[in-house]
Amino acid sequence: MLVVDNHSQDGTVAWLREAYPTVRVVSLSQNLGYGSAANLGIGESRGAWVMVANPDTCFQPGAIKTLLKVARERPQALLTPKLVMPDGRLNALGNVMHLGGVTSCWHYGEDPADYRGVLAVPLLSGAVILAHRETWRALGGFDAALFLYMEDADLSLRARLLGLSLYAVADAVVIHDYALKLTPAKFQWLEQHRLWTLLKIFRVRTLWKLGPAILLTNAMTWGFALTQGLPYLKARWHVDLWLVGHLSQLIRARRQFQRERRREDREVVAWMTLDLPWGQLSAGAWTTRVATWLFRGARAWSGFRVGRTQGWWAEVPPSSQKRAFR
Image 1 (cartoon, rainbow, N blue to C red):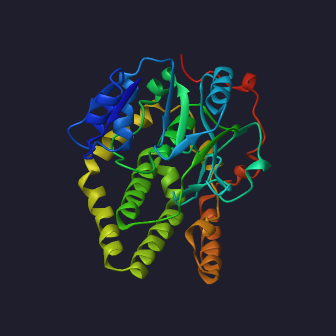
Image 2 (cartoon, rainbow, N blue to C red):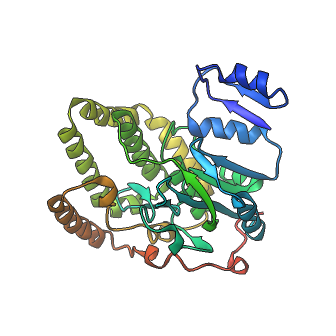
Image 3 (cartoon, rainbow, N blue to C red):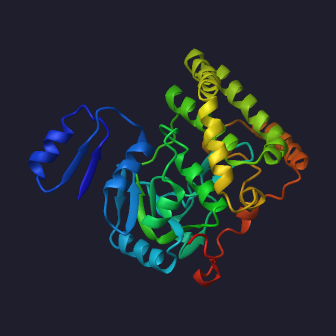
């Protein structure tokens, strides 16, 4: 067993080495962020299958066995389980992305019993992801530039544009101690990584078509920061400063991915949603109506067909998957 300690300060490393001497511990001298630490652990591991899981997840009996069974049937797919909150409501069956780049838990708060089997999903939930080691290698792991949050969305978009499939295994149940909360730091990470991901992944013509939706989303996040006070305003301002400071890095990452991609953006945009997750954002009725009307106009400008997620629950047989890489 391998444990990567991301520069904890609570004595975890000493406790692990004393209580579990057979566990191999990689102790980092600084906090590299979630994605980078996960990449390091994956690189140090030796198994054929790789799973990343948040520390606030609890696997129910048979969950890993079920995930592995499906994974062996679909060796070039990436899988996520059915995530259920401690109160019994559904946390997520994967995630979904709005036209402006905001991601949210797919089917949050619904009855978990309504979903069974293997389900094609727009994005993976980073709480738990399982894939073959060769798939991780082909993707290059998580983007190390994303310190925390949105690394799952970035990974999912890159996977889909490489021709890989994304599934939720609804018969594999994992309890996720999840709560809707937003701090200034989390707000900043979500925003800067939302924009980084969009600017890196999509072609220029797609960014032009999605431009009104992205700009409208930017305006809404500035408006949200204004209503929340100075700490959130500072956080939103630092988003733009961070992007400017990392512009050369972004350009290099963008060029590299554009050389590697094998699918067109429309195959990703088709899985995006027009409606923001107002239930998860706690927006008022007036805000909801106005924003929905504006985003409909932005979608009309883009010319893209969206809403494939309306039929996402149909299982795609393994035999229909095309080989994505050699």
